[in-house]
Each structure stands twice: as C-alpha cells, then as structure tokens.
Amino acid sequence: MAQTVLSSDTTPWKALTEKLPGVLSVEFVTEGPVVREVHVLSDQSRSPKQIVRDIQSALLARFQLDLDHRIISVAQIPGLPTVVQRRLICDKLELSTGRSGVDVAVSLRIGDVYHKGVARSDLSSAGRSRAIAQATTDAINQFLAAGCRFCFEELKQVPIGSQVAVMVGLRLEQAGKAESLLGACYLGEDPNFSVALATLDGVNRRILTLPFAREEGGNS
Image (cartoon, rainbow, N blue to C red; front, side, top):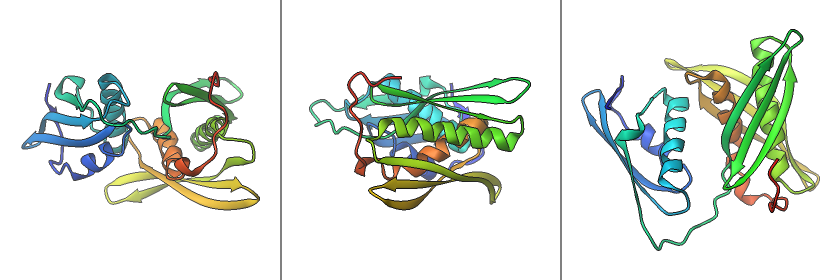
C-alpha cells in the first residue's frame, strides 16, 4: 500500500533511517506525493523484520510518516563483519493513570538485553512528559557500569517552523566530572513516545564511549 505525504523531499527520511542499527543505505521511491517503495540495504546484525519495525517507528515519531510494512524491502549482505552497536531502542512505553497520578514504565533494549525504568508524576501533561524522560533515564542507567549515570534536567517543547520539537536536557556524571547533553525529536502523533525518543537522542550520541555493566542475564 502506497503512502501519501505532504512533501516528496526524502533527504530527512534518508538521514534518519541510515542512523538506525544495521542499516547501511536506503532509497525512497516516490511518485509525486506518494511513497511507492522503500529499499533498504543492511548488514546481518538484525533481522529484516526488526529493521522494518525500527524504520516504521522512527519515521512515524519524527515525521508523522506512517509507512505500510509491505512497501519496505530489505536486502542483507552476507559475510559483512557485524559490529556491535550500542544504540538504545525504546521497546515499550506504558502509562497507568490513577486518581493520584501517573505511573510510567519505559522498556529499552540493546540487542537482546532489556531494562525497564519507572517514574511517577502528577496528572498534568507537563508532569507526565517529565516522568517519561525520567523513566527513560532510569532505564538507561541500568545498562551502565557503576560510577557512570545520566540525570534528567529539563524538558521543553519548542516551535521550529511549522512543527514542534521536544528538547530534553541531560547531565552525564562520570569519574567525578559532569557533562551536559541535549536530545531532540520532532513531536509526532504520539507525543509520549516522542519524549522517550528525544531522551535517547541525547544519550545515543555518547553511548559507544561509556562503560557498560555485565549484560549476561541482565534483563529486567
């Protein structure tokens, strides 16, 4: 099923997709305002089904582009050396609302290792967004070795052109030093998921350089 879009400029889509784990290159085939096909070249670090799912989630959250999985084809090159990529993926986001507040749980994964972070907020929209960022940060820290942690500092929504961006400020504390980091994501159809993605955007810029905890049997 083809997907009708407002813009046929595929450059931003291509740039985002090629940052995803396992993706080597991608081409979008459009016909006017319609996306007809998406052709992906990947290594074998992830299954084609996982790659398609990541592409759908990323494009929906960032550009509100809802692609049918049937128009995405993945060609994998056998024999390429697989590089372990420490890129955090948001696997699940759960919200539970009660009279006294909102409970948030965010599940992240790297490969087959999963961790869940939790937080609680009042019933306000701003409080819920902050709790999502805090729960995401909590899950991130469970992957890291002792003495290395991220702290959530601030969240803002900023108009950029015709869209709104979610910006999340974080602080990395390691070896007695602190470093400020910023993550951003355009507000998609699911604003809650966009907050989690913005938080990960700030972290994934540094994740390769950080010491990880033992991952064997580390799922939680």
